Amino acid sequence: MNPDFNDNDITGGVELAVEAASGDKSARTKVNKIVDPIITYQTERFCKRFCNENRYLYSCTLANAWGTPSKDAILCEWGNASYGWMLNDLTNPKRLRKFDGRNNAHLGKYVFQIANSLPFYERWKDWRFGRKIHVPTYIQDMNPNAAKIFFALRSGNNVPLIAQKLAICENDVDAIAQRIIIELTQRNRLHLLDPPSTVSLTKSSTDQEERESQNDIAWTDLAPEQLEDNLRLKDAWQQLTPVEQYILEAMVIEEQDANDVLSALEKLNIQLNENVPANKTDRQQLYYFRRKTLARLAKLLDIL
Image (cartoon, rainbow, N blue to C red; front, side, top):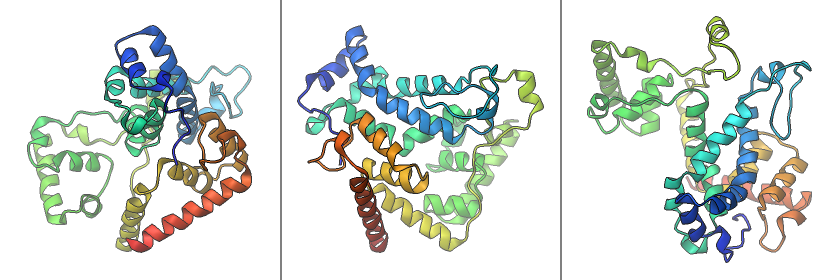
């Protein structure tokens, strides 16, 4: 299923995207209005997922603020900063010019699918955790997989795990990894493989230096059988629609309350059934959709 946008509404079509990309203020306002509920929801999901101790130290600026800071706590800047980053990523001129309205798609559908994709989530984490780093050309020139191995080493992955993820033999991975380390060492650039750390927008640089860095979650060593299961699950997951992925992530992985999910579906105007408007979807229909999606995922796993 896809979000129920009016495909015939020109205010959400290619013409609007082109005008907004060219800098038209009126068009930009309309685009921002279309993407606002999507960005607001994703900002809250992502921000809370990695809030950590901020909820106790700073006053949350999210629409559904949480945490128990003191009354005189200063504002946390991550919520507004995340909203700004997402708005720029999803509505920058280059992105808008790529929208071609294929199959009479509404601009909102286009943005929705991007905002619920794994690459978007990874780009946000790159920004949030300061992981944005350029792979030197002398590393990229080593091998077609050198850049991927570079990032995997930086995330703390071991050789067997990298080989599993890239579907290449361990000896090749080990050889390329050794070349990368040797080359970086000779150029005094080995620090480029240091793992990413969280950088606070609210603490001073002195405070940041005094507290222990918090690393982004890295992959841990897994048994070969579990690695194989994870790869099968990843392949099956990618065959689900964005809405199916969202429902499973919200209700099964994050264990969100059904009422919260229904409220989000209404805000984003997402239909689970083409005959039922988003604001008319009830708990029974939501749980039925979840069960049906879980059954489909199980069937996909059996096929793989």
